[in-house]
Length: 412
Image 1 (cartoon, rainbow, N blue to C red):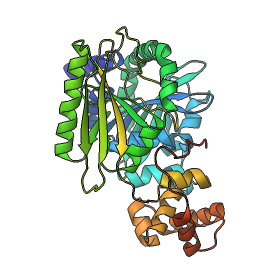
Image 2 (tube, rainbow, N blue to C red; image 1 turned 90 degrees about the vertical axis):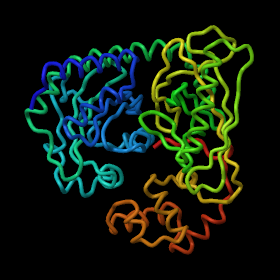
Image 3 (cartoon, helix red, strand yellow; image 1 turned 180 degrees about the horizontal axis):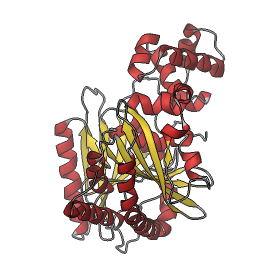
Image 4 (cartoon, rainbow, N blue to C red; image 1 turned 30 degrees about the horizontal axis):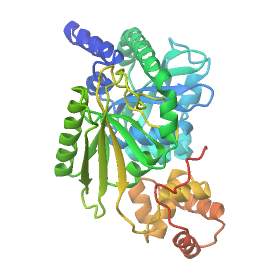
């Protein structure tokens, strides 16, 4: 397999444009993912001491929720990450899952069983692009289930692209560091707010989301994240929010004297309780202002999410998200916090409380019945109950939590 000279040059140019912040990383990664029939192609930044995620930029068929779920939880149990950060994985080497993890390992490993396989992924190849005392950036190539691992000629072509990826990643880290260093304090303040708060640019690209916003966006079905952008599931809602954000961004970029704002009601598809979005324009990044400015902060599990750093001069819009529902509901995130359940266990417990059968839970999650039964046994042990009836009664008797009272994210 090979690229024509013009195609190769275009791929390289896009990689550098993404590193410099002129285009989304997805615009550079998506053509490569299609070319190599990859389920996912991702750049993954990780803090070496804590193994916490710093960022992920992804292209492929893995879906809108893949990066968010991976960043929130599953990178911390990904068996590829530990070996890939060890000294044995030098910059000139590759780590291939087919050489390390056989079918027996895959059948019992929670990363595969709870995350990768249910979403459609299978084989992973990993290379290290950057490393210093604190940070490593990995290139993750994943094939879908039913597709073979990368062939040697495909790996050789990625080796040809690797020096350009390394240079682009260095540009990205330098640019990201310059912006984040000056604004770290403001990010930390926003991360402690109980109000769900997100920052977007004029195209609804997600720049930042505090933990309360993460919980809300994961819980309601009014929104989704696609290619780094916030999208309303209802088309009419999406058009209204997009028009409002664009108007506010244009007004602030033009130097509006008063802070412009707008209120948008987002109902979603089949979502009966709306989310009210209060949008307010913020001065462009790099513009002198007395107001706090927030840009790209490193992403950590249960911490602020940042998908892309704003370029200097880029207008931003702050979104305050408020659920109007007062309906009592069992939130997997809350019961997970209270009882120290894994995300899979929390969803299984919620399914049981909502009346789903073991077969329905297994089918919905794309796992085996035995996996669900094992998770139920673990739930019973952690919640100290002996039967499904006891579990349901206990969950329904728990105090109600909304986003203002939900426990802060726990460490795992």
